[in-house]
Amino acid sequence: MATSPTPDDLSQTLMAGVPGLIGLTLWDADDLPVTSAGRPLEASIVPVKPLTDGSDYGISMVPDVQLPPEVLAVIDLRLRHFAAEQRINTLSAQLSALAVAAHTDALTGLPNRHAFERDLNELAATDESFAVVFLDLDGFKGINDQHGHALGDSLLKGYGLWLVRVTGPWGRVYRMGGDEYLLLVTHFPGSADDLQRWAQERLPVPFVDGVSASLGIAWRHEREAISDVLRLADQRMYQAKGDRSQPARLTDRRMPHSRGASQSAEN
Image (cartoon, rainbow, N blue to C red; front, side, top):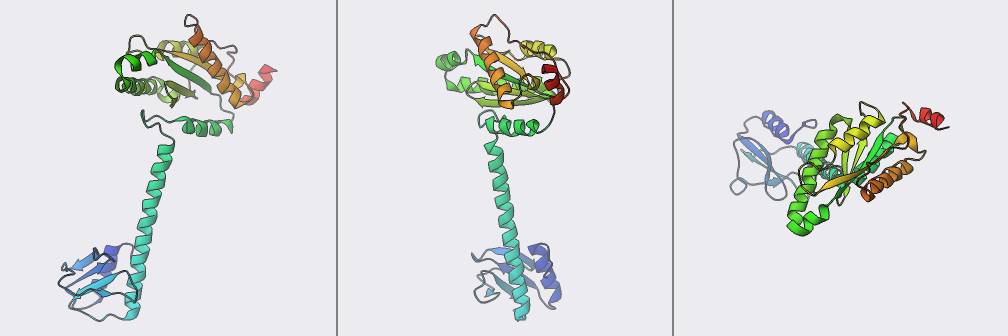
């Protein structure tokens, strides 16, 4: 019994070890059955005895057999162990759910700003090349003002799904808040010019008249500090927003394979 992996195994082992037993049930402090073996027993009919003095658990048996105190103590300890395990598993699941929620945008289901910061910090510890694409919707406020927030929310969710679809395995899409999105591109199969053309062709909003997206792109090798890479992409996005007739531009289109190579190229 001391090694029974589950409450049901515990009751079955006890049932098999006591000759003549027809049924037994182990109860919790609320008189709810924890596990049983043999004939099901009702607490209102068959007397329930505490396993030990002060125990939260009880036992009922047919016939009523006097078990040694040592056996009852082992049963009590196993039930306490099972309850503690269940509580730990429940808390772990709750913590996991909270961790996911903390890194997920509630409206779109996309990773949020906290998730982006976590992923960026992981990339910063490597030499991997990446690009940051900042996106800001143009005309979104007019949709909210004219048609209400329900339609605006649908647009935000739909655009997020579109970004995930077109980005595919090349990187990850984040909603940064409001009508701002960000792409962290790590596996683009082409040059910086190719990424620029792809972004201008595929990332504008394809399904709502009067709404488009301004974008700015910056590569890791363009700035020494990761925060400056983000700032550069943000500046280019606002530059594009200020002049919709001009595409967001890349001032340095070199794509070194590592950060060290980028530094030597810049020098």
